[in-house]
Length: 300
Image (cartoon, rainbow, N blue to C red; front, side, top):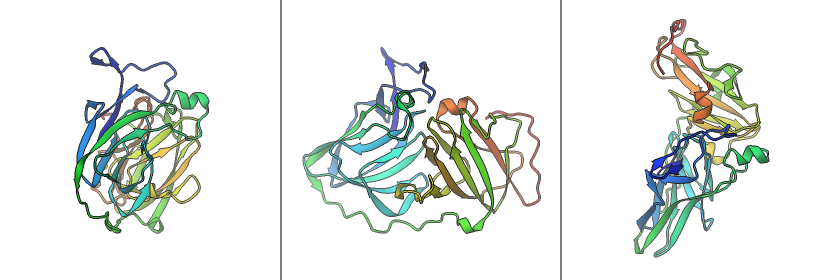
């Protein structure tokens, strides 16, 4: 389910950036896989939904209209070790989740996005879309459903980075549309990482608006979220993490991919307006003792 918010003007998409929308574009309707007001007829007792927040700025809090529980079985990096029972899951732009929901014969239920409560002030919440609610997808169960086996208690072995292997700790402060006070520069390498090492990145949202943080090349492990253990829905492999105002996350990353001093990867806020305004940095992965290249500027 590729979920996007849109605004229509007659028969055309209207992507205009409205005044006071510091979070970016916010639509007044949602589409799923390019369809407005979608529904799905289902014939099984258990239905697996793969959710992708493909909006450029909106944060969704997905829940069913009858508050039924579901099993969260996967996040950005794939299956969790064990399913987690939830009644809602929050996804910021770029985040993914896989859920399994049980249906009863002949019933209907609606997956909705509810209001966002992340500690922003009244105006910040209003102009970030926090007061909005949407019907996203209706599930319509057949009168007779095929039986489904229960969700397994064990799903998949986890290969998350070990925080004890971390060789360095780096700080990333998100504020305005900059990271560590710097806007993106195509000819600047912000971080140099040695291939085969594990690092800890401490990412802090230092202002009053919502951000998130996405890292290219690797999946990371969240070891601490806002001063405590990560909630179960953030316990698996991730590449994007939502950071409400004044929230900090500790990420552990292991860089086992190819080393290339000439070709940088990016880390950035996945809210497109913030990214476009320069909330992005770049890093290269090098072999031990290898120096990064000097970049003359190149296309993203």
